[in-house]
Length: 401
Image (cartoon, rainbow, N blue to C red; front, side, top):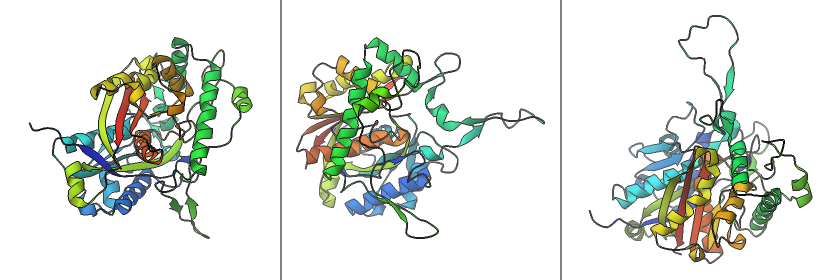
């Protein structure tokens, strides 16, 4: 086989990140994904007929939008002859979609495509799991909360454990303090607000217009999560998952959110043919497995093998985003990765401030890193995330223009 083709990103956009029940709550996941893909096509000015494949990550899937990658792409103007695949890899789903499309490009199966992730946590259904043929003629039936279920690892213990409770185990393993976690949460909000104030998000976070029966449409133009916080307020929050002796609170953990993100991937040669300017190269991507009881470790245990793939060290990386599913995960990274610097990590915020729309997050991180490298005039960026079930997922991006 000939040498793998170089994969480049020629467009990267995302919607604002809405809070649970917030400005984007009236939109289904398919509508959010369609908006992101349409905005990407508009930003790159690429003819939709040139899109040969679409990959999208989506965790909390429901029957209203089967294979959201294909249906959202068609709704955005991509021809029905272009196939699509939807990915469920928990918090890595958006990244997994981008990895999959990149492999197709590297192997020469396609020459240009769209990939990303979406989640509408405000619209996750409640399910009836009693079964269609169990023959319950009389009596009440119970609905199961799909949102709560998605945040639980049912394979731990007899009844499963929430991800936050699993992360309390990580806190103990790495002797992470409450103070460390609250400081990370404080910096997250400070950094995200600063990035918005400085206009860093303005040219690629695409506003979403929400129709109303009466009056002007509501325009959601900014992330709804970042806010001024104080260390006093953070310190006063009570442990949420482990009331006695716990350290993880609702303020030093990520929120529940709605958003979509999309990137356009192509080969370096195809970009030249089409006159497209590569923003970054997707130089490497990697997954690792970890113990599901310590799933948070994945976000930092993926870093050494990821960097080894291209033979660089931590000191060669200019910017990191380690998703703040919980501040404890980032604190664990500082304990585990020698040389990981605070002043290189999560400089535009992350899951605690921006939010964690799980199926979107991996793609959102990549989109933000593409632009952060350019606007900070840096060369090498790394994005990683922990994944429920015991996985770590990450990427290395190299700025090109």
